[in-house]
Amino acid sequence: DISGQNLAERVFCIITMCTAACLFGIILSELQQIFAVSNARSRSLDDHMESMLSILKENSVPAQVEKRLASWMRFQFSGMQAHAKTQDMVLNLPVALRELLAGTCFYNGLFSRISLLDVVSADEDGDESLRRKLLGEIIRKISAQFYLAKTQVASMRDPADHLVIIST
Image (cartoon, rainbow, N blue to C red; front, side, top):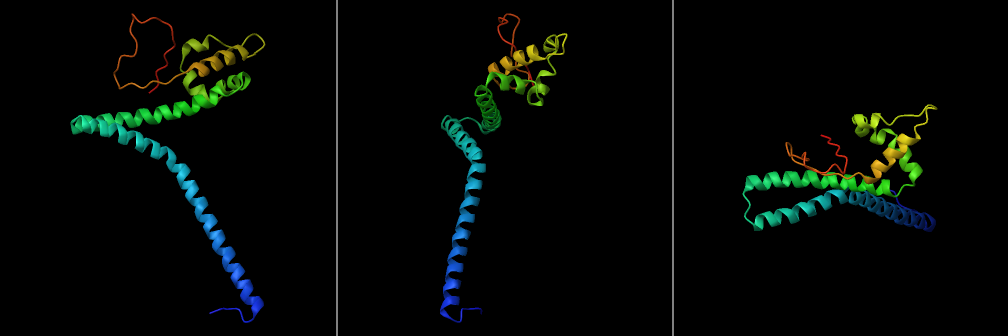
């Protein structure tokens, strides 16, 4: 064993051991914080699912139906959380930055498939400001809704008062 032979060496060893113990505690607390942040989303989903499943169990919903409902609720909850985070970011941006974001790859995949938006193009000078303004307003007002496959989302009799973008 290695140990201090005189008072100075013993004091040095004690201080070194105390410093090492403090650093170990700090590293452990940082790791715990990292895991807590990464698991926060999972915990909120688990809490949501637990409350929904308890309602289903109280009402004696059959197991097969409960399983399908749980799958749908998990999908919808995750999608709505992601949409809420995106909308929170977009709504807090100044207009110029929102328009800049609308023209980037962040939304290009969604907007590139809408032929109606192809009509709004650059003017003679190649200025894309009108298109950016339109897309900036669209992303400000966009809202997500989730439907089961083969669900009718619109009818001929519905008023044409909003734009529906269907993405799978």
